[in-house]
Image 1 (cartoon, helix red, strand yellow):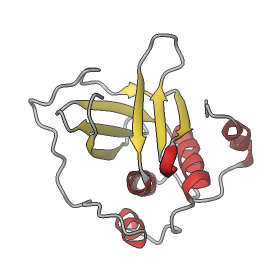
Image 2 (cartoon, helix red, strand yellow; image 1 turned 180 degrees about the vertical axis):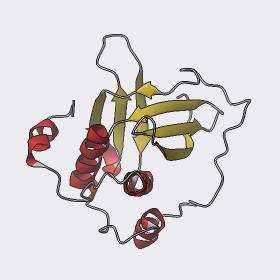
Image 3 (spheres, one colour; image 1 turned 90 degrees about the vertical axis):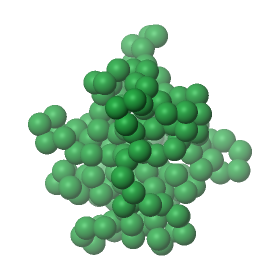
Image 4 (spheres, one colour; image 1 turned 180 degrees about the horizontal axis):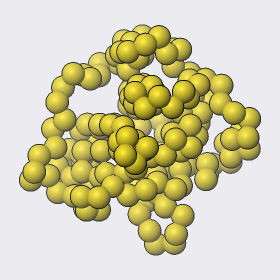
Length: 170
């Protein structure tokens, strides 16, 4: 994505049993990605380790509660801004994420890398500040709750801990 993130949207697809992450850039390009339960769990754990856990789920509205508790000015009620004219550089079908990595940046920001294992395949780099991370964490948790995935918000199964000790999560 050539420009900054304008908006992101996360929806549960029951048929796929995956979350669809839609990233809209300020230059009207949209990237569509599939996130599996396993990768959502890995991503939430990594973001929680770096930025702290979200509040424990207390029912609906988790994303709004979490954003409000950290002062993030997220607008979860705004409709998604992508249109039929939005450019889809990777196509209309979401790409399956099979590689996640975090790289620390100055001033507490991170670069989130979402991609595929195969050499030369899709790789997206997202620069995220604290506010965007909090919004992403909250939206992922709310979508996981909607999917009835029963993901813990802070404590994740120990078998994933070894994946988080290096920069590349998978």
